[in-house]
Amino acid sequence: MRSEAEAQLGGLERFASPGKGRGLRARRRFAVGELLFSCPAYAAVLTVSERGSHCDACFARKEGLSKCGRCKQAFYCNVECQVCMDESPAKLQVQCLHFLSNHAKVRGYPGWARREGRLANAQAGVCLHVRLWAELASLRHCEANSKGPCQTDLDKLDNEKRELIQNDIAALHHFYSKHLEYPDNAALVVLFAQVNCNGFTIEDEELSHLGSAIFPDVALMNHSCCPNVIVTYKGTLAEVRAVREIEPGEEIFSSYIDLLYPTEDRNDRLRDSYFFSCDCRECVTKEKDKEKLEICKLNDPPSAETVKDMIKYARNVIEEFRRAKHYKSPSELLEICELSLDKMGAVFEDSNVYMLHMMYQAMGVCLYVQDWEGALRYGQKIIRPYSKHYPSYSLNVASMWLKLGRLYMALKNRTAGVKALQRAIAIMEVAHGKDHPYISEIKKELEDH
Image (tube, rainbow, N blue to C red; front, side, top):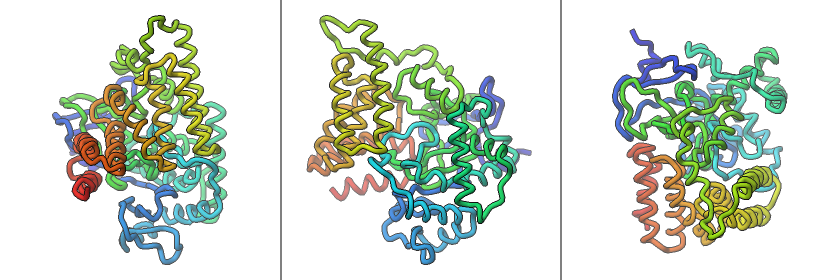
């Protein structure tokens, strides 16, 4: 007899994936857009910046949320959501969240930028300590349900990552020492490493960070840069849908990382965060790298050494910008974007992924300062190359069409706005499902305009 956990996965089964450890594979055929399975979060915490617009318990986006009468900080849909929080370890999350929101000061630019990997850093670390207890509890839940130990790769952690884990453990003791009894330090290191490999970032329709969560069944899927499924979220429920036809016996693959970048960059990211390299078809053939690294078509084309140097510069400026977001002003950040685009533009076409990366950052700055025309200009340059570089039904492409549509509407260009929003809906109906609240909200936007 199949176990209850297996029954929840429907037409899927767990198996030992050669060279990859545990995995999921199809027991039957799945069509494009079909839901393979859904998985409620065992533990989840809302990011600080979304409090008041989203329910702290279920993450629903609603107007008129009720403020908690006791703590005066959290907001809930109804009594049921508040009771759910009060009767779970999440109560400790809320207590800690209140302390942090009152005492932690975040400098510089907020973390609006594209989220990469399965678990993104919360804005300037403000939310990091909040979710630790919930993640700790959820990992115990994983093992209690006989799913086997979560992936850790503890032996592959470098000194910097080990130091970060120790800092997190110190924070856990500091904020929760009055409420919890802990295992020894070695056990905590293992558990925190498991969280780093198995946590997920919950995002909204524009890929803004809503919160962090643990989804035990979703974490069973292995990575491919040619994924056959996509993970989306309905509040704190993760949903996994097919983005191409899946045949019986085929392994189920999601992507752990942003797929915009060339093979070397993607595998650097995978090795740094998940301690493996990808051997999917795209990584073996590198067939898309030439288009992703497109060079200017000049009578006197740049030398191979010039191109190599510019790629090195691009990677460095991307890292510089990532760090600068925490302490530089929007005008300073926009200047970094514009200067780097000018320099890279002497060698790279606008469709080059490094150009697109900095255009995306510039668009984000423009949105933050409400420069709608500037944001639209960058978005118009980004969308076509995005559609070419990303896989079918990419959330990155959908979110860009959505942003463009809303910008067009704000700037009174309804015809262009309708077309862009309809393109976003077409992708989201496959990735999110036709009944998703986000799609209903976008359709209402169309009706209201």
